[in-house]
Amino acid sequence: MNNRIKQMLLGGILALVVATPLATASRPAGTKPKINVTRAQKLYKQNGCAQCHKVRGLPGGGSMGPDLSRVGRRLKAAEIARYIKQPKAVNPKTKMPPTHLKPADLKTLSNWLASLK
Ligand code: HEC
Image (spheres, rainbow, N blue to C red):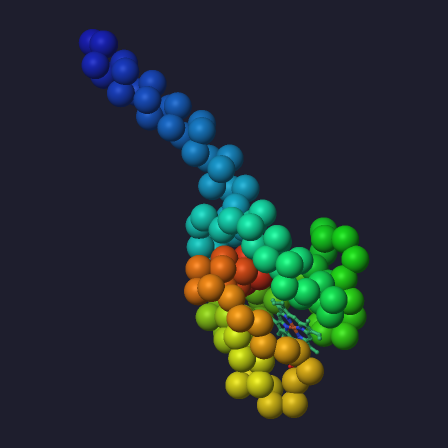
């Protein structure tokens, strides 16, 4: 085997070894890649979602709203985003207050919630 091929092989194997755990850590079966879970959980906390909701694995959480531990089974990221932005557009009688987030933050938060299944 010549050196160039050896190098390419090594590079490929290295890339796989490094990339695989990263990809699986942030990607529960069959959802979009690259969810910044740390950031999403921070937004979740900062915006008071835990006052009314629980998510398994996170401490505390209120029970006025539904448990969101598996919300990704029912709702897609876009639907969750709409819920966060304008709960009354989804359910006119809701007690959930609208939360104003930057578009990127809204996406991070709803992608993460949508990944909970
Ligand atoms: C004051 C309490 C309260 C706060 C704060 C709150 N919610 Fe809610 N949320 C509710 C209630 C109550 C519902 C139940 C359905 C309804 O009333 O429309 C709900 C429903 C939802 C749903 C739909 C769940 C389903 O299974 O249909 C999602 C998603 C959601 N909330 C996400 C969030 C996120 C994310 C935040 C933080 C940005 C948040 N909520 C903050 C009370 C709250």
